[in-house]
Image (tube, rainbow, N blue to C red; front, top):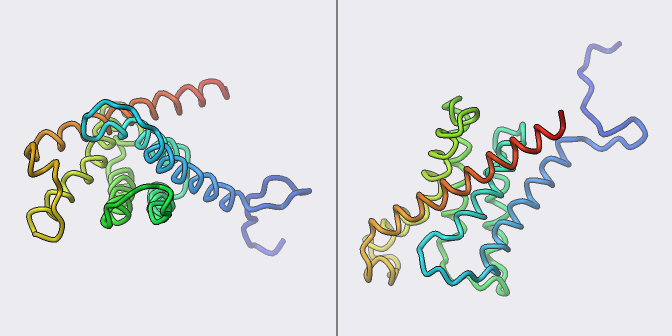
Length: 186
């Protein structure tokens, strides 16, 4: 015995580090979240309506992973995908906003234990994290860096609340899926 800790592997015959697989899974969830947001066209005409699927995918990864920066990994991959021309994003600040959103999720998840275990607090975390999008756009808009039509046209409270509600809905969906999967495993 050398006294060194053994790394977790999938099996002795197939020695792949489980952390690498976990990071790959988080990257796939991040890519899937931004692909769904870009290509799913639901004519709701409500700001933030993609929060349902985006936050569900990101928070499933956050809740299932043991990596402390799980949401940041997923949102970093999502941010990288926004640079591809076929995605159709024209907001140059969206990648930064997504990274901030992931950091917000990870920070809240780490600092407040209730966000991990309690549905109400998990829902609150999802809503607050998705609210980063309109709050950052308001700051950018009023600083004069970029003009956002929806803020100028309809005010800024409505998008903030709808983003919160759809982000919270995505968090409920993620919590239910993770809870259901864990229940099936037992």
